[in-house]
Image 1 (cartoon, one colour):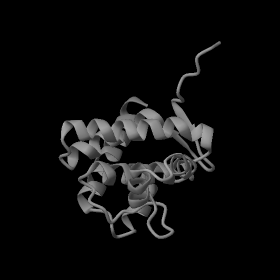
Image 2 (cartoon, one colour):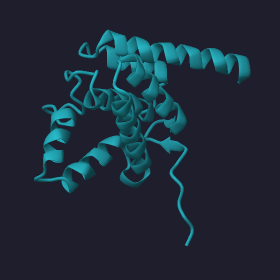
Image 3 (spheres, rainbow, N blue to C red):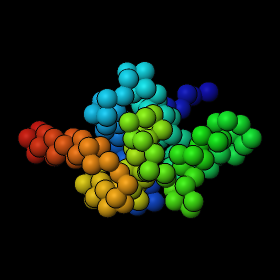
Length: 156
């Protein structure tokens, strides 16, 4: 029996996401909103585990639907609905982003936009156009994207 390793690249309906990039972006975001170190680790692992499940369930939305069914009738389901079940929207971005819930919601929304085929800078633009996302979080992600472009131009 061979052990299956988690994917390093996640394929979406319109694009590909490099998992290490998503986790690095997650870490930058959680540090920029001054989450406690334990909360940073929780967000990192939530994004990591969600991305690991995307190949099995087809999308981030598919993973969240699976978790919703799995956790039906529990407090975890109530929390999942609070963050990800906002009256027909895929994510509730009006929650405080300086929390584990808020950081997870923002990162998963960002990842989903990339998997839908948008370049990271376009994905960030689409998210910031929503108007409910805190400007500081958008700027933290924008800075890391600019740094990525700079490094790839030098070393890529």
